[in-house]
Image 1 (cartoon, rainbow over the protein chains, first blue to last red):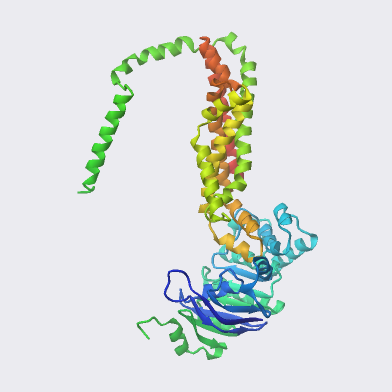
Image 2: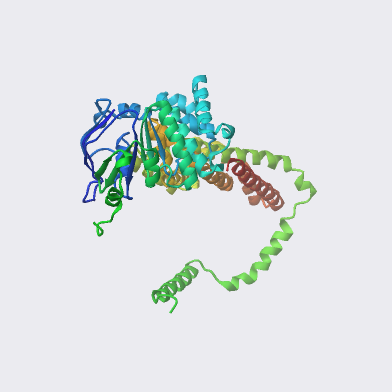
Length: 249
Length: 254
């Protein structure tokens, strides 16, 4: 579904690429957990999949089409079928839960309809369904500021579901949540992943979560992939390799 | 020492600046002895009696004109500025030249005081509130343009990225991610400018812009100080009312 061919991202003014000539292939149905220290390139990698982050060189094929060679309009349409959630939720303040979820439909609609807030019956029903799925239906008219961290992330997940995505991107979605909430959010993500048969990528710091939920683990270090395999193969040695500092190696 | 040595130099510079400013403005504390004259003048002349208050409806009518000028000028300015500010904010401007163009346009409009615009329009378009509305409008495009584009620049970019990730177009993403964030501050800037515009429209009355400012100025020139006092009371109520309305709306929004 996604095929990377020597994909590289180098930020201007840095010596080392944040993502260094990665060539990986991902199939529908995989639940990929990406591990790595801060600055290892996890966020950059995940942002290349929906072209929020342009490549410096190399290519990424999404369903055989080169994502980064598309026009801005085509990229936008690709993005519309990839749901994304973030560490700090990035909800729109002062809007209600339901309004936030409805913005998930923006990618499929004409700008003028988005501007005027015109949604079809089907879209409204879908929004309510996604809230049902994340257990937030009773809160649909609450303002998002009034919610707890875990609830906010579930609003963000509903918004992503509203896109009816076949690729799901999570940029450290549980990094600002407490452990038990983090576990609940992961369970929800896994359940939705299975129901919708998506390709899911989650950046995560918690190895335990990655091993419990992931079907494939990627370990990143300084822009390189140092581990790529099923969770069973993630041994302590590999863990050391991913998280060790320069000095310790 | 708990302060750096250079502070002594700053203090000396400030003292010299104060002394120089006093010299050029003929500021003399001894003149304050005559302040009692001013108090006496106000007490003797600015105490309207019943027959002065009988004119109140005329003053109220004029104050409605003033309110209309201030509202129309600032509100139209806000309507123009809301979309334009996105061009004048570094993070949302589509191109460098559009940023430079709109920013310098705002700076120019802001640099010209309302009274200068007012004098030009009174001459070109004739006496009356229309000239005053245009003057307030142009100056406030400059002021609100600067304030709102700076709010846009200070807005968090997380929601913008999230909106982009839903596949929304650039413009829609920016609009939806930014406007709700900055809205309360936009309103408080707007109501402050509205309040300022009421005071400005008084000054514009002096150059023939109409409204209660003109009435006040005419009363003053014809030694009708009681009338001036009535006008001042009406203006105070007006400004207070706008301030009250502003805080009411803001409270509803936040």
